[in-house]
Image 1 (cartoon, helix red, strand yellow):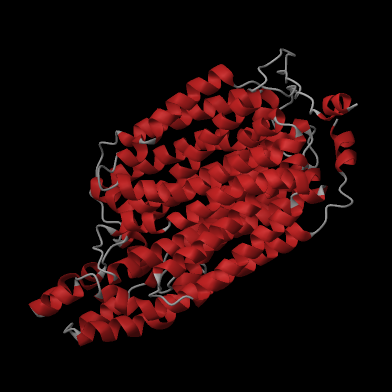
Image 2 (image 1 turned 120 degrees about the vertical axis):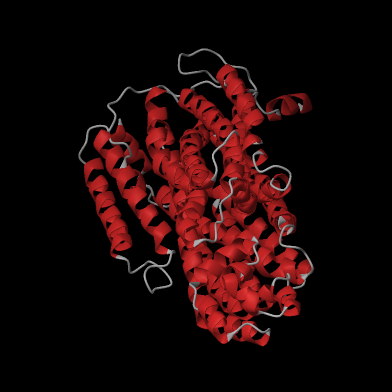
Length: 580
């Protein structure tokens, strides 16, 4: 009797999977798919953030001063160009994967990404020509990144049974979230050695991933030939690009204004982009084979999961920028680090954030397969909300052990949230829509990065505008700067000071220009040292920090509420019947 019990209690061997032609694949295929797609997502997200720390070295390498007002656009597009392209293309390329094969589209993405990584690393141009080359190559590199992003979740969802998808998507999701933080550390390590290495580091992994994916990845779902929805693709791309461009230029000065949100050009881009996206929605309800089935948003778990994902990504993306500015512009110089060393140490100081994500993500994904995703998605956002509250309460000149614990808590919260959230989104999709649906989820993620930069930079500039002028003016005058020169420097747009802090530069020389020659030599050493700028910016920066962290707190709290809403009444089967 005991023998029978033991036999019947033994779990059945997992069924082997077959490709779209019905051919039997190895029993470990799901782990092959997971490892390759995780490598792809990791490389892409590392690449999306590696420039944030290494921008000073890159600009120095091409001989361009990023703090010169005429060069601000180069700075912003080097940061945002990759994100804009991936945000715009992931849905279209995910749909192409549904039609022509997800593995084929994914492998092509690896090859495209690797090719343009090589072209980035061999840049020979200098000045504005060099900056334009890097921006264009980064944008084309983003096309490959979009192919990888759009199809990785769909390949995993196809390969894993539903009871294991939380773990699999959790591992993949942690790679996506943690990669953006790992990129900060890598950029800090590589940039001082050789700025070209920032781009070259992706190449060997890209070559390996391309060959490995070509040999091992297969399409498991049946391809369904369909017409390409050209009008849908065009309107979606134009609308989203216009909105992203408007946000990019909205944080730059306009005339006598500290920001460009009142600029007719910016308003036209954002409003026009939203109108075109509205036209996209109308088109998608009327064409026979739409790029994206808007009916998917009637699936409650899909709609709420994407809303929560968007809000959490806005909070997470903006947090990275704020922490870099805080560390490079204020904390590290005040504690004796030279400006040349702050990029590396900023990456090192942010390691607890990465550790929290890496620890929590796979565990939460595996447990959510057994318990369900909702408790983890809600709990993760509760932890993230608490971390933003604690960050808002920290003094500007904080104690690092306390700071490390708080950002580790944020990493834990984001790691706990991301895996169950992505699993609930992908499980809500019918098989023939996983590419487009995964692409839409990635669009929300990547769009949130650009949107968060616009929001957080705006809040920071507003906060700085209140007290930076007086603090900087009185600090300069107290150290021997003539009143006229001090007034001119203090009246410059706060965005210049913010970019300087973000890049880890001491901007006093740039702000004063030739006026530094009118200052006694002893005072010049003080002004150009590593403590004066952090001391005058600390007070107004504290107000700006509070505004940014309160916004992050609200975004994560709403994401938690969206995750808490039960998925009862989801018209999943009805949608499947309509989509056949």
